[in-house]
Every structure is written in C-alpha cells, then in structure tokens.
Image 1: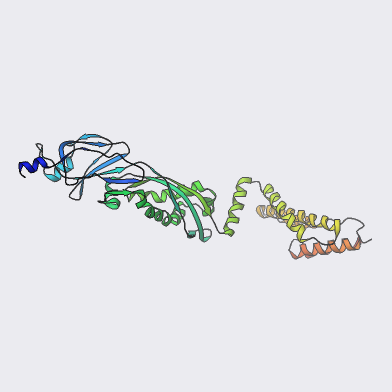
Image 2: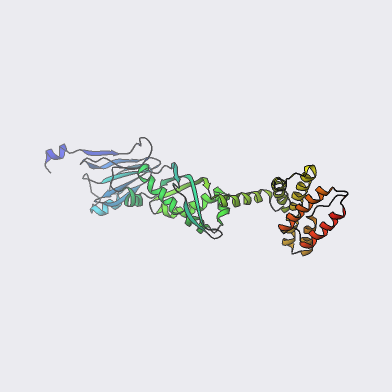
Length: 351
C-alpha cells in the first residue's frame, strides 16, 4: 500500500452500539471497507454482548464493559491472525452486537384446535393462547444458528418460528409432566410451568433463554369442560362428600319436579319435591354405601327413597302417587318388592 493510500484509508477508533427503538436482537457494526485501529475502544453496554468474526469464524466474545483492542484483549483473533505481541497494524474484522434484554409480551396461540394425547382421555382437542418472554443468552449459537451475517435481525424475524416451537411442544409438555391433563387444565400456572420446562432446551438450541411462559386461556371440548368444572367444584368443596351431594341434590330437584309435574295441584307439587329430595338422599346414601362396602346401608337408602303416604288420601292423589312410585321403580331406585309394599299401603288409605 502506498503512503497516500494509507493516509486516505479510514480507521475505526470507537466501536459501540446505541440501541434505537425496540425489537433488535442482533446488529452488525458498519465497516464500509474501513479497518479497526489497533488500540481502538470497544464499548459494550449493559444488556449487550459483542463478538468478533474473522473470515466467517467467530473469534472473541465481549460482555458489558469498555475495552482497548490489543493482542491481549483479542487472544483468539490474535491466534487466528498469527499476530505477535508487537502487532500495531489496523485489522479488518466483522463486529456484531446482541441485545440481551428480555423480549417481553411475545404472543403464542393455537389458530386451530390441536390434538394432545392424555392417559385418561386418550386424544383431546384443545385451543389455548398466552404470552412468553425470552432473551439472547449465547451469542455464538444465536449467530451461527439464527442471525448469521445479516445487518440487522429483529424480534419479528423470529416470531413465527418461536410460536411454532411452542405449539409443537404442548403435547410433549403434557406427557412429560406426568400430571393428568385435567389437573394441568384446572391450574393454568402449572400448565405454563410444564410447557416452560419442555421448551427450555429447545430455546437453548437457538442460543436463547426462555424467561417466562403464561397460559391465559384454555378452551376444551364441551364434554371435557363439564368434567373439569365438576373437578374444580370438588376441589372447592374438599373431601366433604355430604356437601357435594347436597349441591348435586339442589341442582337436581328443579329438574325432577319439572319432570314429575302434572295436574295434581298442591299434592302433586309436594310429591315432586318429595321425590326429588328422596332421590338426593338415595344418591348420597348409595355413594356412602359403595365407599364403605356396607350393603345394609344401601338397602336402607333404597327404602328411604319412597315417600310416606299420608292418611286419608283422595283417589286421584293415590293414583298420582302410584305413578311417581312406578317411575322410581323404573329408574331402579325402588325394587319390585318395595313398590308392591307401598302400593298395598296406599290402596288401604283410600277414602
């Protein structure tokens, strides 16, 4: 190089990146044919990392701080260039900066229902959405796997790939957690934690660290949602089965009374209500009998299902009562013997 060419050549004395705006993950320092002066200053701010790339090969990595670029501060590049301790000439190398700030409120969701496998229910179709945050943790991996030699690489360039990664790992997250799907669905924080644990190594392969994962909504098929609602209700009640059966009975009485309605006036309404209460009692007692293995309790519960016949009933009331008892027998609540006994008792009460 001639003296005049050397004088005309521009050298870089300060290398730094002042981030402007949001959404930039990687930025290449503009060289434009210029060379870096030996002893130049490199400034890496908090929430930044910088790497030097020589002829496509990653050399030195710098964390936050201020550096004077010499053979001592560029040991890998010095080795690659075969520089000695007396190196004083300018050099050419690509410098890339990376933002290590958290990229927050990144959205993910299922455009269409996706199918996941569950040990209890087999295949389940669900829809879900939420958000997550991440940051660049390993600039070497991120540079070689993602950003490459581009002048600028932003969050929007990576958005589609990361959302796809989340969707691909939902099923594996459920299976890998070892927790029944309904338990995860009832606790969205637990679901999000299982998903985060599944995604951590996948993000690491890209040089990223997944900082946070949330599940804001989970939509299940109607049948499965009903089961989940019952499970949540049981969780609120705890282990008090009596309270649970009282709740179930209260829900069943209006439907039972409606189904038993007719032209029997006050007596018919009373019988409808009595049958509803009796049904609730038989359900509670039968459940207790099943849990305790007490067949005697089950028989007593079945007997309690039939309402007592008041003395001096009118013929139309007796017939209405017999119709309701027949309905209970048809549903298996009363046995043939119990129905026959109550029938004989009612016929004796005719006025």
